[in-house]
Amino acid sequence: MKKTTRFKRELIEGKILVNSKKRFKKARKNFKKNFCNFFRKGIPGFFEGLRKKMDKGIGELTRRIYSRKVEVVPNRLFFTTFNGVYNCNQKYITKELIKQEVPVEIYWGVTKDQIKKRKKDGIPDEVELVERYSFKYFKALASSKVWFDNALCCVWKYIPKKKNQIYVETWHGSMGLKRISKEDIKDRHWLRKAKLCGKNVDCCISNSTFETQVFRETYFPKNEIFEFGHARNDILFDDTDKAELKEKIFKRYNLSFEKGTLVDSVQDTHVCLYAPTFRDDKSQDFADINYKKLLEALREKYGGEWKIFKRFHFKDKRTKNKKVKNVVNVTSYPDMQELMLIADIGITDYSSWICDFVLTGKPGFIYATDLEKYNNLRGFYYPLEETPFPIATNNSEMIENVLNFDDDEYQEKREEFLAARGSKEDGHAAERIVDYVKEIIKNSESEN
Image (cartoon, rainbow, N blue to C red; front, top):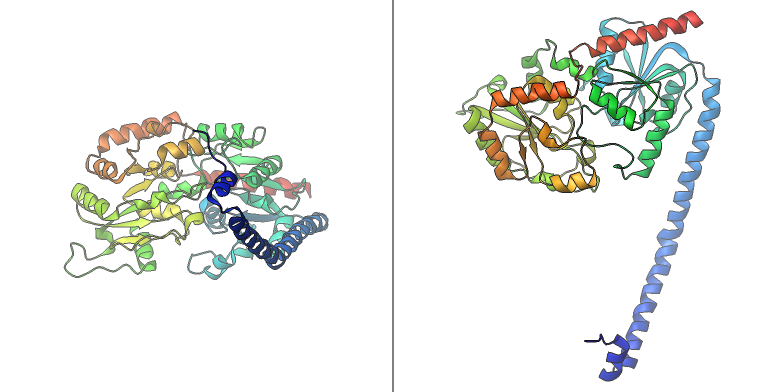
């Protein structure tokens, strides 16, 4: 049947004039509203946007001029991380420098909140903290011989890298899983910065032949790459006192034990670490994991008492979750590697931390409710089935995977996974990186 136009219907219904009057009133009202909003929000918004663009341009120009006048200090090192926190590879390189008493000046670009938490997060006195994107931050960048970055931080708010400065990229991922090529990332600003980073970086630190290949195929095709391993993973091999660390973390979150339970101390409590990644579309469907059922399954499979430590990505730190007994939000804890060390089991969706956790030999699981959607939007470097981790797409499958977990099969697949990716991890990455730093400083001093 041919569709009747609204005009024809109104003519037939005898409502053409009355409806025209209504439409005129509505249009006048909308015009008035939009006109007022334009002057109330539009014009100020326009000038605010213009102000930001002008400030950005003036800032970059000024930093270019300022950088030329600042001399590089041969033994000054600058560290920063993507979330402005004292953690990741940079933390463990810093600790090794201090341990070896290397005569260097150590600067860290961090958030204002991290400066306030300095003592709580155990940042050594030897480290000079500067607030990210402050004048002191840019001065430290301009004067440091070596920059250590685990993302795109040193080029995010641009200051020129001089010819006698060394830019080291340590990255924060590890042996997968999410793709990071320009075809898979939708954020154009991020892509521009990644390209700029590739142009400025002198060398990348890799932990495997797989990661080296990813560097080569993305933003670092011609940069020097050292397969030293990731310094952050050294703690998974060394003799760190796990009991003492566990006590510290439990105390930080005021975890107490009720009388009459099966445990009376921290050491008798098992920990399951659940840490999902963020979604480019800002979806939070991943937050539907059934913690109560999971706790029951863990007790049934392994016995004893359990706590689930949930740690969201810093972009999802405001994720809302109902409070559940024995489930602790540790998103604020700065060091993921320390959490891995005390955890008995690890669960994620697509976050690469699980590829660090696999080094411990402890059971790891994948809980991914949006597997097909995520694969279409972002994609993986290899099918998740190639990992040793049992995969669940809903809560029922997750519980079944825990209850039916076969450790012998897991260990066999784990060895195959590490071998296939050419893992170089052996617990001595920080030592190799520090040796590289000492060589840079030695050559710099001889030039002067």
